[in-house]
Length: 49
Image (tube, rainbow, N blue to C red; front, side):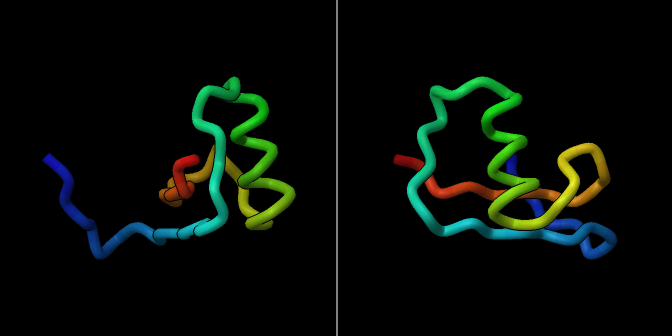
């Protein structure tokens, strides 16, 4: 079940992203395109290709 928590920050990256990539490649999208830190408590939602 998916629910939103008011105590978290949500980031949406709407560009198509190949979800078959490794964790390191996807975390690079978070760092380089969104400017976030994949190791913090924020939630990153990536567009699916």
